[in-house]
Length: 65
Image (tube, rainbow, N blue to C red; front, top):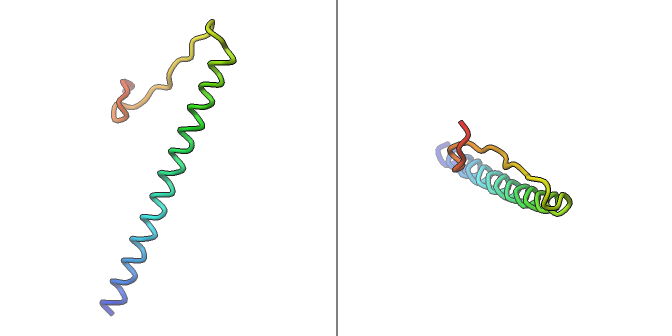
């Protein structure tokens, strides 16, 4: 019984790690897409427009409360 439970816990842990890594990869890809969209917007607007940064939380290094 103990080995079966241990095997199940290991499988669950491995599955959670895979999902977490997938989540991180997706977030990084979305961040890259956002950066690219911002660059395209800056190019389209020229120098006459100012793009305001999205407020971030203090845990991200931002100053928004």
